[in-house]
Amino acid sequence: MSELQDLVALIRANTPLIVIETRDESRVVDLFRQALMQTWRELYRWSITEGLRRLDMDREDPPHVAPDATHTFQAIRDAGQRGVYLLFDMHPYLGYAGSQRMLRDLIARRDCQPHVLVLIGHSIELPADIESLAVRVRPKLPDANARLKIVREEAEHYAREHGGRRVAVDAEAVQQIVRNLRGLDPVDVRRIARQLIFADGALGMDDVPRLAKLKFELLNRSGHLHYEFDNVQLDDVAGARRLKRWVEQRRGVFLAAEPPPGLDPPKGMLLLGVQGCGKSMLAKAVAAGLGVPLVRLDFGTLYDKFHGETEKNLRVALESVEQLEPCVLWIDEIEKGLSTDEGNGDGGVSRRVLGFLLTWMAERRSRVFLVATANQIDALPPELLRKGRFDEIFFVDLPDAATRAQLFALHLKKRGLDPSAFDTAALAAASDGFSGAEIEQAIVSGLYAAHAGGAPLSDCGLRAELKATRPLSVVMAERVAALREWARERTVPAD
Image 1 (spheres, rainbow, N blue to C red):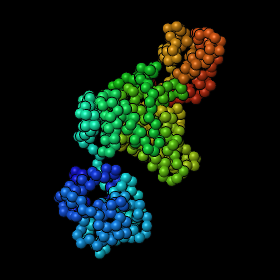
Image 2: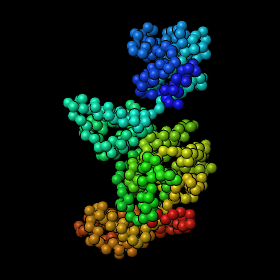
Image 3: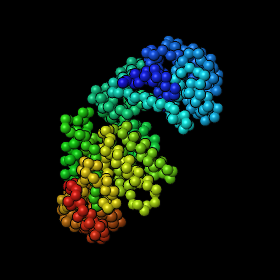
């Protein structure tokens, strides 16, 4: 049934208490006006500033009850005709025992008509005994046509305020903007559309990334998410040829409004590998390769000392991410956030968090691509590695000679140096066993040494830094070897 028909059904059933959380009050009033055209009731509205007043189809009667909860409940009880009462921001006054008792009497229809009471507010928390008697109704979010209508209304508003000057519109950009406004209520859709239009009097492709940032700032009220602004492209990452090809093959299906028959949208990947080999950069590059924003979930901020709050924080964070679709969700070093050691003394919080995350991974229908990175395979719970949790598990190994040469070229160029002035092949041979992070640090150290000596950086200086460095593959040789051996038959090489 439609939203309107659902409301009509609740009114016809004389539902005693309905709770609606919304910021778009006028839309709720309009819905009830339409509903009462199909099932007759008297319609009233109450607020602390205006008191109780009757709403007709074409006019509003003046208030006739003092604006306090006690007198309002008494007037509802004494009404001779059954009615629908829209009570705006009434819930704070239900903390008083007298108000709660009067409301329960109305719900139980003691000496009164079978009224329908509707509590309306942005966020409504009720006493437990009243909550059990309430029916919560969540207003449906605007569909694509409704969002497009709001965008057009704001464009017309801009034209009126600027002497008839029309908004410059890119039709393809408008389609993407309307699609990316999905998941927002009408108030937020209008707010963002207005910001985009009034910024420069145009709607173009450059507004799409700006919309993503505005939407993120709007939804990330919990503070557990971080919008990643680094513009890392797939070509900025050395090696990982197999992973790059995998992403490119799935981009079209991931972005499609309706995936081709027989193909499910890709859901995620796990990047396992040696520390410093570029897993974090690859996570950023995957988002760029898919052409969507990147959002990082900070597991450390989820944990709370109060029972149930950690799981609630994760639920709220994931709900916010789903409203940002399409996007990539990055969980860095996931093993640290999902430790399930029985002796960790956290009261089972980690197990519950893992269970919620696994359920979300299996059941989500939103276009959120999950990229998780991990360094320690033995710390990962087996449930996470089961086939089907991720589309693929890639192993990011120590770079081979060709990739190391590419890494030297990339990092030298990044620091304003000409890679052709260096023998990158010889440097690659001298850096066997080095990770990408260790190669970058060797260049940084060489630049410091060259600056201190008043001479430009040279091959000789870089080789000296490499010779003085003990890479992780040497310092932690046993652990690195064990990880590489485990991954050899169980994962797909990224390169």
